[in-house]
Length: 547
Image 1 (tube, helix red, strand yellow):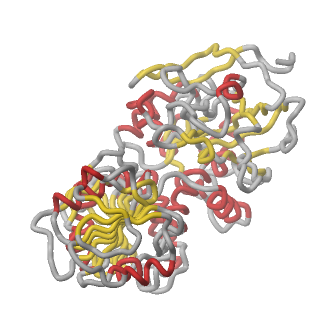
Image 2 (spheres, rainbow, N blue to C red; image 1 turned 30 degrees about the vertical axis):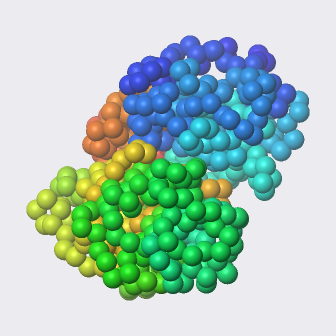
């Protein structure tokens, strides 16, 4: 490093399962020719950080990169720390570029940037690489990134997105989680067979509508299990004979055991079309809701015999629709607050919202923040404790924030015809929920989930922040320096936080302070708030108070 940078720095490191340390003297890495040095301004704590902490080297994004860069190239990136290596978490940052290597082309010193952290072009065994997972994140004063990693090879877009000086550091850092919320609604859904994919047809006889599906999008191969006559298809006699995974499975029938076995054969982004043909399942079907979230698998269907009818029910996006009756379950947590605010300001005509949680204190905080926003937008909103006021049936959109399988079971039970059930919560892969697949098929309920965000989602939210349409700081609940990170992680892990917690890594000695405590603990910061809201003056006062 040049003499203007320290030789060591404060950093938070995960060193094993449920082992987190505050390292006050983590060595600074030398900067390679293709690398960029980012000085962290602020970074948010995410519930996903706790999942990495619990899983550590067994987390799918902590494993080794298998393609996109060679082992030799990866070895030249000091911040690449897969497997059992200690790693710095923190994937919700804003920072400033303070140095670049001699071969860096697309980044320059002085840029203030938002960090897109999901490296989908670098696959791991069961996921993809990511900043704050197998590449070190921003819970440190400085972080090294490599230009070979932070450029999208398909589009040439940068993963470090320039931002202006106007928003607070916290507002920019909060764009990443807000972009994940945006993605949950804006993600495109596949409404046909996958062109060039693998199709499995499971049926004892002719399949109505299959010709229409094949005409819309031709798969590369078709496999048949059963007696269906599909010209040119390969045939197998049992599920056990199936090789590999499938992009589409058309299942005509209602055998729960078979449906579960077929679900396990869905590939990444796979769709199962359940054609009941007048039948019904005798029991709930176990569906891997972790794979709905992380692998983007989907279930659709029809009560009748036309396989094309199931695909016709798939929405182009899972955006809110006019007249929607919406339930946000787990609404009083950090991500739930974002969903409620996004709903309130969506501008979709005729919608109403029930914000649902089981903690009265957190619901009261949520109502204090969100009710005025919803009222100003003309969106009817209630704030309900589902323990004392159970939800009734009839919701057309249900978003689940809590990774509890029974909540997805209940969501399907109370869903109206044509409803969307958004499993936003990050269920671990292998988490099985007992779902009424008959209801999903007959009522046209669509179960969806997404993981992370894309560059376009971050740009969408950034534009709203830059033009003042959206104040992401509305979701801020507490601030801290490095000394309070362990407490912050506990608050997120135990779901006691009522919003997002923002870390300022350049403040090594500051413990966690809830905004509600500022009057008592940091009165000079509280005095800089405007109408009780966080902003540039309050953030400047916080940084000055620790100088």
